[in-house]
Image (cartoon, rainbow, N blue to C red; front, side, top):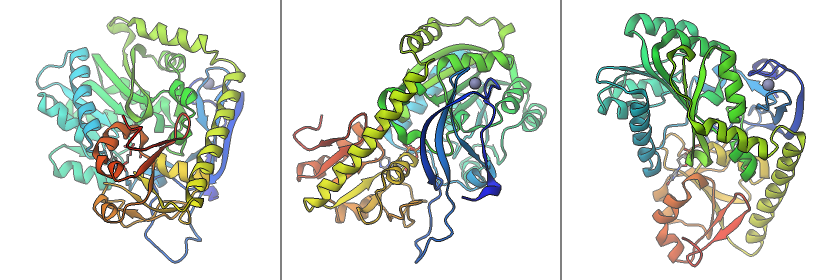
Length: 421
Ligand code: TYD
Ligand code: ZN
């Protein structure tokens, strides 16, 4: 463990309390997106403690340790996928948020963690003025090249003030799968308040803790994901920082997410019924009690053991196994299940930045889909299982020729041509 760039969580970043329930602990694990060049030895590879705790006061689930964002995000290898699923989803976000906010041509949309600018490009097609803010210098450069103006910065109150002066107020501030990565929620929400138009909307998309708890999908647990939110926790958070939770919608993306709309209380926008419905569902599931998190920990242990045993038994029968999708979720599964280069022939991934590198921790080589097609395994472990439908359609030939997939959650299962939907 490298001590100067990591610190243990003490007070809850939502409510300030410090009464934590220990939920799961996975030991020291490398960062999920820290792909490496192939090397003879990986002696100096950094690893940091990975585990989850639950705040007994607001029921925020938090990682146990926060790694310095400068280490995680200044150069970043996660590039927004251009898969059918995500392209369709981004169009959905542009339409839905546009309608909910009542965006007019020329209104400013600012996105935090805007990556290569794909989502903002969809808003620009709808007539909005767009601005991205993303600390990853390599990705901000790509976005600027495609014409989506992007500041290579972390979003803070200072950045928000600069944007306000240069661009005016934002009708919509968007954060897709970035809010759960933020430690200083007070700072970011102060920035949102400084930049948001009086009747503007702050829209975020976060993994939903309910999905995590229901599916035992422990692969969303990695250092970048500091927070796993329930709706009741979000409600507490926004009220504490002078904002109001207006609407929540459950979405299937990234294994189960929430689209959350937030406004200024004084704007008087109505609160939809789904907010109360989901808070009631969380109460019915007794997610305020320690027992729910003990049950989650038990489920995680079972899936982890079953998945690792399933791969090992397929190997023992003489099968060659490879990973499908070098996602952050995937590198987490492999590290946590102890599946490495001895077990997995390679991992295939469509992201050019990842190809030719090796996975963090396990050092499994990443190969392009073309390379994989010329040398297919007998069985693929589906690491990008959140795209399972799309991938099974795309890999129909692999299945037809006798290939199989392992789907990890909620219970490890083998899929062949006979069982594929
Ligand atoms: P993703 O689920 O978007 O995110 P995370 O890294 O947060 O878990 O990652 C999906 C990965 O899977 C990404 O590296 C691209 C890869 N992928 C493929 O290789 N083939 C595919 O058909 C799809 C849909 C994704
Ligand atoms: Zn709390």
